Length: 85
Image 1 (cartoon, rainbow, N blue to C red):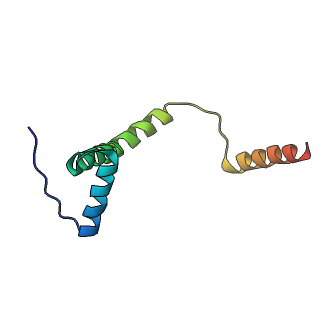
Image 2 (image 1 turned 120 degrees about the vertical axis):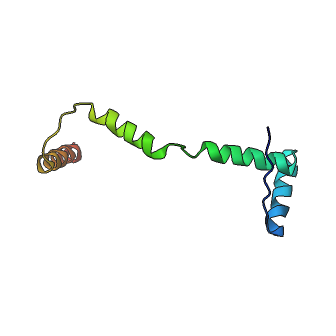
Image 3 (image 1 turned 60 degrees about the vertical axis):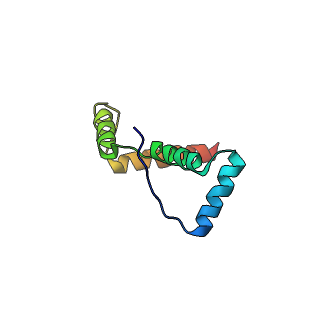
């Protein structure tokens, strides 16, 4: 069942919405519904849970590593070799 939503807009914003809807060939209501739908799809509903799940998945892997000083020196050696080529 649909629900009604009332949104108060300044006249300039309403004018802009009317023009945008007209260009697209839809009503303002349709344009607003589509914009809300699109915006809501861009927002994760479970942001923290998804980030934690990704982190847990990442730590299950075993990649070669070393202490930070050694890693930085190896990176610099690699850059030096690349510059000498």
